[in-house]
Image 1 (tube, rainbow, N blue to C red):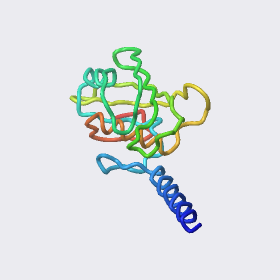
Image 2 (cartoon, one colour; image 1 turned 120 degrees about the vertical axis):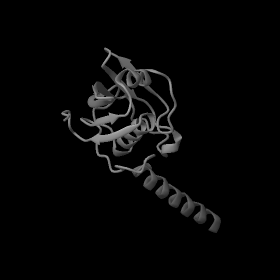
Image 3 (cartoon, rainbow, N blue to C red; image 1 turned 30 degrees about the horizontal axis):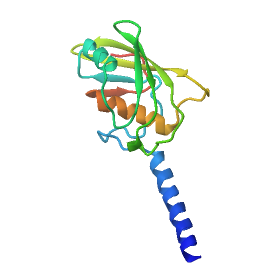
Image 4 (cartoon, rainbow, N blue to C red; image 1 turned 60 degrees about the vertical axis):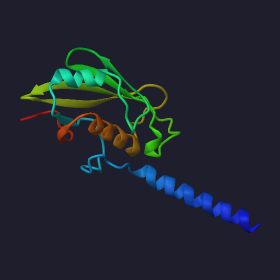
Length: 158
Protein backbone atom coordinates (compact mmCIF):
# COMPACT_ATOMS: atom_id res chain seq x y z
CA UNK A 1 0.00 0.00 0.00
CA UNK A 2 2.90 2.35 0.76
CA UNK A 3 4.34 1.68 -2.69
CA UNK A 4 1.01 2.64 -4.25
CA UNK A 5 0.99 5.99 -2.41
CA UNK A 6 4.62 6.62 -3.34
CA UNK A 7 3.82 5.99 -7.00
CA UNK A 8 0.90 8.41 -6.83
CA UNK A 9 3.10 11.08 -5.23
CA UNK A 10 5.82 10.56 -7.84
CA UNK A 11 3.24 10.76 -10.63
CA UNK A 12 1.81 14.02 -9.24
CA UNK A 13 5.27 15.58 -8.84
CA UNK A 14 6.23 14.51 -12.37
CA UNK A 15 3.01 16.01 -13.75
CA UNK A 16 3.66 19.32 -11.93
CA UNK A 17 7.23 19.51 -13.24
CA UNK A 18 6.09 18.85 -16.81
CA UNK A 19 3.37 21.53 -16.56
CA UNK A 20 5.84 24.09 -15.20
CA UNK A 21 8.28 23.30 -18.02
CA UNK A 22 5.49 23.63 -20.58
CA UNK A 23 4.80 27.18 -19.46
CA UNK A 24 8.11 28.52 -20.69
CA UNK A 25 10.65 27.38 -23.23
CA UNK A 26 14.32 28.21 -23.04
CA UNK A 27 15.46 30.82 -25.53
CA UNK A 28 18.50 29.72 -27.56
CA UNK A 29 20.00 33.21 -27.42
CA UNK A 30 18.78 34.20 -23.92
CA UNK A 31 17.11 37.39 -25.06
CA UNK A 32 13.48 38.51 -25.14
CA UNK A 33 12.28 35.33 -23.44
CA UNK A 34 8.84 36.66 -22.51
CA UNK A 35 7.40 37.04 -26.01
CA UNK A 36 3.61 37.41 -25.97
CA UNK A 37 2.85 37.15 -29.70
CA UNK A 38 4.63 37.06 -33.01
CA UNK A 39 1.62 38.55 -34.80
CA UNK A 40 2.86 41.89 -36.11
CA UNK A 41 6.46 41.25 -35.09
CA UNK A 42 9.34 42.25 -37.37
CA UNK A 43 12.69 40.51 -37.33
CA UNK A 44 15.77 42.33 -38.65
CA UNK A 45 17.85 39.53 -40.14
CA UNK A 46 21.54 39.68 -41.02
CA UNK A 47 21.16 38.20 -44.51
CA UNK A 48 19.91 39.37 -47.89
CA UNK A 49 16.26 38.87 -48.81
CA UNK A 50 16.85 36.17 -51.42
CA UNK A 51 18.73 34.04 -48.88
CA UNK A 52 15.95 34.51 -46.29
CA UNK A 53 13.35 33.33 -48.83
CA UNK A 54 15.58 30.40 -49.80
CA UNK A 55 16.01 29.40 -46.16
CA UNK A 56 12.25 29.63 -45.48
CA UNK A 57 11.57 27.44 -48.51
CA UNK A 58 14.31 24.85 -47.95
CA UNK A 59 14.35 21.82 -45.69
CA UNK A 60 16.09 22.28 -42.36
CA UNK A 61 15.74 20.94 -38.84
CA UNK A 62 14.62 22.53 -35.59
CA UNK A 63 14.84 21.53 -31.98
CA UNK A 64 11.52 23.32 -31.35
CA UNK A 65 9.25 22.11 -34.17
CA UNK A 66 8.78 18.71 -35.79
CA UNK A 67 7.28 20.15 -38.94
CA UNK A 68 6.33 23.31 -40.79
CA UNK A 69 5.59 24.27 -44.36
CA UNK A 70 6.32 27.40 -46.33
CA UNK A 71 4.30 28.27 -49.42
CA UNK A 72 5.88 30.95 -51.55
CA UNK A 73 3.43 33.52 -53.01
CA UNK A 74 6.02 35.80 -54.61
CA UNK A 75 9.71 36.67 -54.28
CA UNK A 76 8.95 38.66 -51.13
CA UNK A 77 5.92 36.96 -49.58
CA UNK A 78 4.68 33.58 -48.44
CA UNK A 79 2.71 31.62 -45.85
CA UNK A 80 4.40 29.79 -43.00
CA UNK A 81 2.33 27.04 -41.36
CA UNK A 82 3.73 25.70 -38.09
CA UNK A 83 3.26 22.01 -37.32
CA UNK A 84 3.68 19.94 -34.19
CA UNK A 85 6.12 20.75 -31.41
CA UNK A 86 9.31 18.77 -30.97
CA UNK A 87 9.94 16.63 -27.90
CA UNK A 88 12.62 19.10 -26.73
CA UNK A 89 9.90 21.64 -25.94
CA UNK A 90 8.22 19.33 -23.40
CA UNK A 91 5.11 20.04 -25.42
CA UNK A 92 4.96 16.69 -27.16
CA UNK A 93 1.44 15.45 -27.57
CA UNK A 94 0.23 19.01 -28.15
CA UNK A 95 -2.35 18.75 -30.92
CA UNK A 96 -2.78 22.52 -31.35
CA UNK A 97 -0.91 23.05 -34.61
CA UNK A 98 -1.61 24.49 -38.02
CA UNK A 99 -1.23 28.15 -37.08
CA UNK A 100 -0.52 30.12 -40.25
CA UNK A 101 1.43 33.35 -40.61
CA UNK A 102 1.85 35.59 -43.62
CA UNK A 103 5.53 36.38 -44.08
CA UNK A 104 6.65 39.49 -45.96
CA UNK A 105 10.27 40.35 -46.44
CA UNK A 106 11.93 43.54 -47.62
CA UNK A 107 15.51 44.60 -48.07
CA UNK A 108 16.88 46.95 -45.45
CA UNK A 109 20.40 47.89 -46.50
CA UNK A 110 22.50 44.73 -46.41
CA UNK A 111 19.94 43.12 -44.08
CA UNK A 112 16.33 41.98 -44.37
CA UNK A 113 13.16 42.88 -42.50
CA UNK A 114 10.85 39.89 -42.03
CA UNK A 115 7.27 40.83 -41.06
CA UNK A 116 4.99 38.18 -39.48
CA UNK A 117 1.19 38.54 -39.56
CA UNK A 118 -1.15 35.91 -38.09
CA UNK A 119 -3.68 34.64 -40.64
CA UNK A 120 -5.46 31.93 -38.67
CA UNK A 121 -5.44 28.25 -37.99
CA UNK A 122 -5.73 25.37 -40.43
CA UNK A 123 -8.01 22.70 -39.06
CA UNK A 124 -10.18 22.61 -35.96
CA UNK A 125 -10.31 25.58 -33.63
CA UNK A 126 -10.22 29.33 -33.96
CA UNK A 127 -8.09 30.40 -31.03
CA UNK A 128 -4.62 31.81 -31.58
CA UNK A 129 -1.51 29.96 -30.48
CA UNK A 130 -0.88 29.43 -26.77
CA UNK A 131 2.10 30.99 -25.00
CA UNK A 132 4.05 27.75 -25.36
CA UNK A 133 3.42 27.68 -29.12
CA UNK A 134 4.19 31.38 -29.52
CA UNK A 135 7.52 30.92 -27.76
CA UNK A 136 8.32 27.84 -29.86
CA UNK A 137 7.57 29.77 -33.07
CA UNK A 138 9.65 32.75 -31.91
CA UNK A 139 12.60 30.59 -30.86
CA UNK A 140 12.34 28.73 -34.16
CA UNK A 141 12.89 32.04 -35.97
CA UNK A 142 15.84 32.89 -33.71
CA UNK A 143 17.26 29.42 -34.28
CA UNK A 144 17.02 29.58 -38.08
CA UNK A 145 18.12 33.17 -38.72
CA UNK A 146 20.79 35.53 -37.44
CA UNK A 147 18.34 38.03 -35.91
CA UNK A 148 19.90 41.42 -35.18
CA UNK A 149 16.81 43.12 -33.77
CA UNK A 150 13.21 42.34 -32.88
CA UNK A 151 10.49 44.93 -33.31
CA UNK A 152 7.27 43.88 -31.63
CA UNK A 153 3.88 44.79 -33.11
CA UNK A 154 5.32 47.12 -35.68
CA UNK A 155 5.02 46.91 -39.42
CA UNK A 156 6.88 50.18 -39.87
CA UNK A 157 10.60 50.72 -40.04
CA UNK A 158 13.03 53.62 -39.94
